[in-house]
Length: 125
Length: 125
Image 1 (cartoon, chains in turn blue, brown):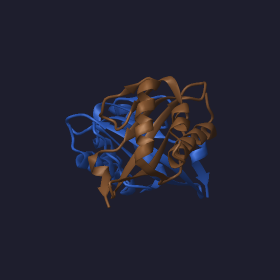
Image 2 (cartoon, rainbow over the protein chains, first blue to last red):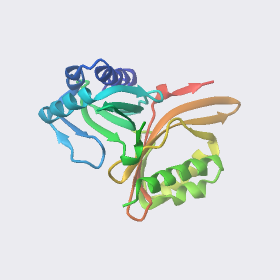
Image 3 (tube, rainbow over the protein chains, first blue to last red):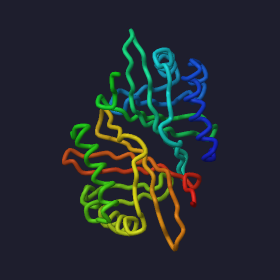
């Protein structure tokens, strides 16, 4: 099992991958059989192929991810973080307030990610 | 299914219950068969009897819960919030940085709560 510090470092790498416009770095954090539900309530993406397409598109559309509070660990193999997603598309700026929960396998890869944000968490600037 | 605004209002009531030192208000937000894992990685509490004992003790020991960022909804029946827990015991002040994820049933009660915080998220002041 990863330590809390290792889980938090991986979540920081996820943010960094977006902020350095490096989708392959983001994708490399996930296990081959990982599941992603982003946002929670939408259809789950299962397996690295689906995830890779999703993250290539989302890294391209996101300008910045900004932590809003320190990343939290747990007493298990999950960690959570509150951050904002800054998107700019055709001159329109949007901020989405999001909380991600990630669960890690023993090899240190993300096996499950859930992103909590709803329509009301997105604000057009 | 609750709206996003309704889920967020219930999570605010959870914070208010702690901050008004009103454990019964906190307990009333949960379904009879609710499950609580606080912190994630510890044994789950199942059913209102176990929850009630847990929340009576924790409301008594917590001085304040403070939101660290806006409460998030989702596209489903879950919502999440990042907050800090301020505890004072025998003159020693501790802050725990926590993220709670709550899932609601159609009657508007919490059926599942997961609290993400680990030993490294607790700081003695």
